[in-house]
Image 1: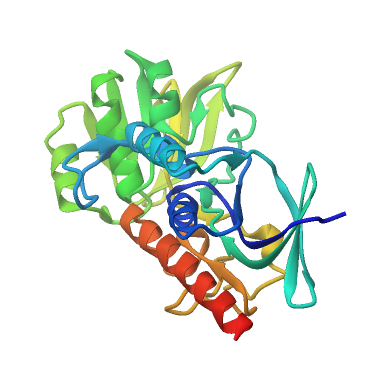
Image 2: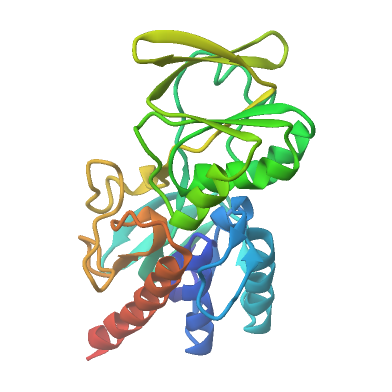
Length: 305
């Protein structure tokens, strides 16, 4: 039995959800921040050099700072997994693995997850040499040879992070060039440990009990390289499967929003990497989280009138 009707429920505790929660607390709204864990993709980020007001930090440090800010504002994370969202009159029912919550508005800020290569050996060697987070798993490859698959900022950051850990770094890029920040490209190109292989399609990750190599095709030729680890950084998939029958989503799965964070359903807002925009920047996610909360509060005020 639902006893409390909340003004908003925020699903997701990455930077978009955390920002929305901080603003909700400052506005003295009745709300809950729900997520099975905190930090989102910040926990997998390397150096952060482009967030206004912060000269340099890391993803872990940034996450710790935001957690302290949540505590300072009296925000307590409900560590629960959302199972379903449904309409109830003008309100919404959010069902988790631990209970139900009725709310006037909903903010979806569930972020995104790493995209998989879907090649032979990837699943077999998961956590046995295949990784999707250099920050989390990079130290396991100390003094070893690794391949970083990808050509964007995440792959460049992974290769840069591994420069003090691995003995040799191969960057396997399916395109003809990198797509990322110029300063990251410069760091990679000037690093003697890094060998970049462009126009290379990863075909298979090989090994026995652990990863031993990677097979790729380049210009019609199939080649093998010996590596002890493969770090896959080829983009993200939005965490929106739960909401595809609730709100309109784009063909790639992102939740469709307008410039005011409105989804296709009045009263439901979305922010951050799960929403349309595709830029994957912390400053954008934070701004969208703020906007979503303010618009949710405005929506409630308009409903009362």
